[in-house]
Length: 119
Image 1 (spheres, rainbow, N blue to C red):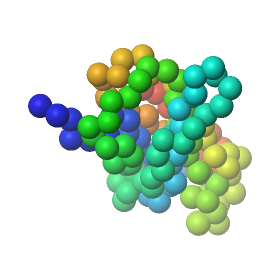
Image 2: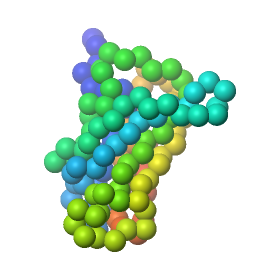
Image 3: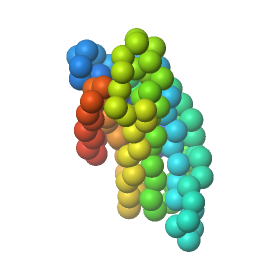
Image 4: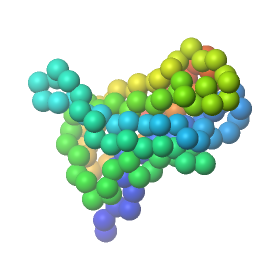
């Protein structure tokens, strides 16, 4: 059975407001062979539930390696006139098993953030 969602997804929650963070621009990049530069694989925006589940085509087979998810948090906070210490958040991670789904949650506030490997 073929997967029905992007092999890499994310979810952003605004901890200060206690709700999903909608309309956060997200970019997925992959470290190129040789390790000197990243290339953009996909761009997306979180939906009303703070999720971006359609970054990549569900049939795409990724390779092992280093990837990063970049969240444009500055514009998200600016939209509500909220000052933030983090204009963007970069989460770099190792994709070691391309057969698995990788979910990157981001719990966000203007002055802090946390993340983990989700399911």
